[in-house]
Length: 115
Image (cartoon, rainbow, N blue to C red; front, side, top):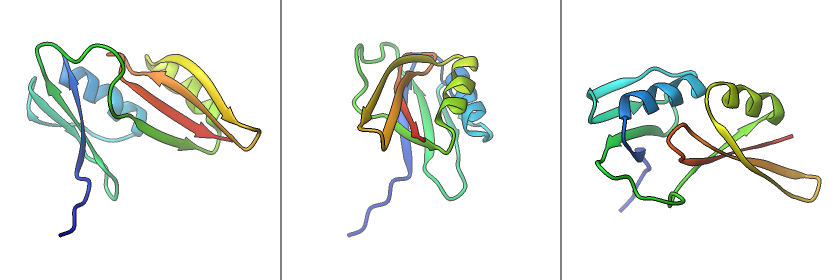
């Protein structure tokens, strides 16, 4: 048996708004499968992001998150913060591997790593 990741899905209060935000970050379009309930951000050649409305999203740190990579980490961090992300913390393994933990508008953690 072979499995492939099809979609990484976020529980959220407003799937339309959160999908639009992530589409802006990734430069993709929104596919509102069931507007207000289940919305996708398809990525050609990549994993689709899904956003489903739940009445009470799990409080605290999410169990899964996206790790994004950028050649210019600082520029991308600044760009997504301007779009509405919140910087949470900065980390590194020595000088060779650095990343920034951010939160999207609903508090879901994600990371941007790079040089």
